[in-house]
Length: 217
Image (cartoon, rainbow, N blue to C red):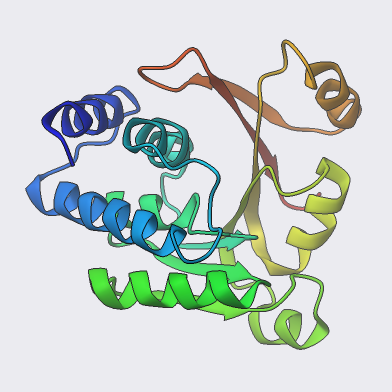
């Protein structure tokens, strides 16, 4: 990782309320290298340039962190190459994280990253969120269920509901409410009780909408 990239990561995270020490920075650097290396063999992400990975994947994944006070266990549905779950786990090692993904090659990558970074209390689940066996195994097990641009709001909440503890919450990470797609998002949210926080991603002109739903929903 270049010095400029390290500066963007460290200062960007701090702007989002996350302080990264040397150990956490090293984890991000290793994660970046492994992501780029594996991406040469399999399509994990279309974003391959170092700075873009840091801003659009790493920093974007940290945008919900300020809203997670008191949360001990998180389920990341449709984690893909580990977003937002892995950056969140690196930033807050005490949080338990479960990464749910239905594409086998991505699960293999996630397991490799967990082993390589030696992340405690982190696990993968090779499944779809609607699978009954998985629901039975993990029912009402999480203080927060999160997903990053996985699906529409209604479908996401249907998928998330079985896994959320009483008085827990679900967080949908979406694009901005202004511009293309914004009006559709507003329609999806209409009539639903929610909190909307639009967070600017540091060092970019991009905004991520953090939409919080408190159970029951």
